[in-house]
Length: 390
Image (cartoon, rainbow, N blue to C red; front, side, top):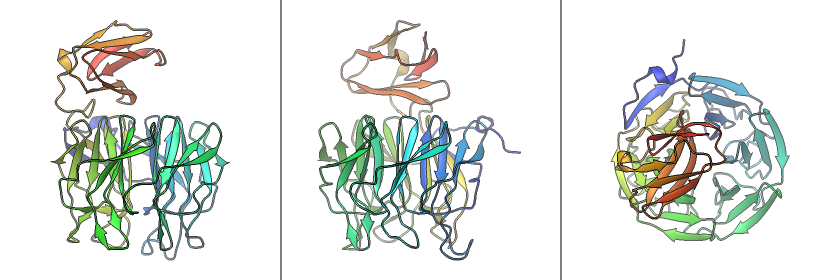
């Protein structure tokens, strides 16, 4: 019988194995989190486990509190791997990808987990492709780059769910790459690394995209070797985490790195203890990162292992903040919560008691007023300090 995760010790900066993926292992699927649950689906079976090119359409939900996987309504479109997905509100949007027939699908679908239903949406505006970057911010979704055939893309497109329409934005300013990593931190997207298909080299460039101004800003290069980021990347609080698949020398690695968006700096963390996997699934739930399945670098077939990472600061993922020094009032609060005695540029993260992030902001000065009127009544934490919302 599977044990709830709460029964396992959760040491900061460490990995523990959780329940194996609930279905046949695969590579190149989609993964995301909605409302404190993780989801994995689609992809491609390896030819050793299941002969021939076979692409499943099943979707599975992971419950971190029971440590159990449950099958949901299958994807109704064509089977595929290499699809793109992003979450807006309580719904996920999935599309593009490839299968044995087409190397550039461009259809797009919306999944509502609460109703367990799929709805087809407007086709992607940039044409069929796979291996894209995909993220969401400010109630809109973004898809860009990727490749089809021998063509590698640099364009970026914005999706507005209120109009079901796509709008082209400013192109990625660097070379078109594949297998880049993404972090969504503080209302901006951090994009970098990857493989330059034309030259056969890996890069360590790192960029920030601001959707409010549609601008790209180059940041400090990755402090490790240039990497082919075919591993996994996720965000916890105001920090990004990257598992390096292999470096420019072609050596597979198990290096795991933390990116601090406040200081624009990198630090190496406790190595990933599972197989070093390609085409894996990953997501964040509350203040934990999850990664698994995919094809290990040293064997030819997929695995179904899944792992959970606990960062240095279990509640916020932020290290070096003295939560005991801040003042919060009123408590209980009905509309605006005041946080005082802050250091400038301190990240403010409000979570529920299960660790689900509800509000993320930056304190520009020593005092911050936050609108919490939309939060349901209950007990919450702000930078590890509890307060009551009436």
